[in-house]
Image (cartoon, rainbow, N blue to C red; front, side, top):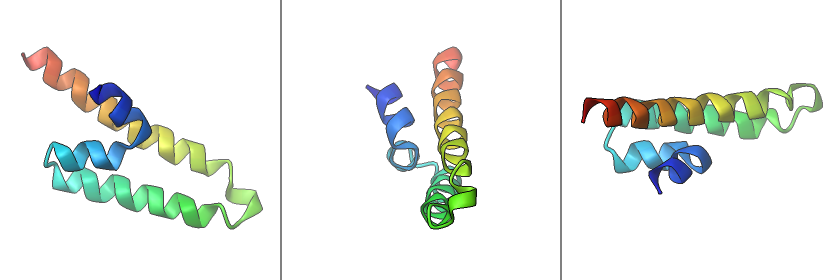
Length: 68
């Protein structure tokens, strides 16, 4: 279930895990992506930002699983 949350809503995943800096970075990146939607030339950057945040969240899950 955490994988789905990490892929669809990375900032919420970091908020639940209480990783404040990661939450702030992901939230800022996704808010920036909303503003990038206003420009037709920068729309291809939106999925890249989302992928970066989701990759970071899934990587965090994998790191914690490997520790256990």
